[in-house]
Length: 104
Figure (spheres, rainbow, N blue to C red):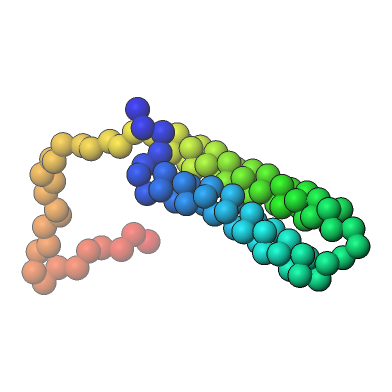
């Protein structure tokens, strides 16, 4: 049994990849800028940036996990697809010149 349809799996995979890559790249960019400024306590500043990046990654991954759980609950609540057999149904006939009666 497939847990998610393919489009949902693809979107969740891209979201998880972005949740990992974007904060990491942003943190590395900030650390490059810190090295250019050369503060007195460079390792402390880099460690603060690393903690912020780790917190951002964990927060964004928890958001992706929450979205995945929501998708799973939605698919479980919808249930399996049910296809009924085609049964010909007669539509009500209209008689020319006659209007349907309104109920008082």
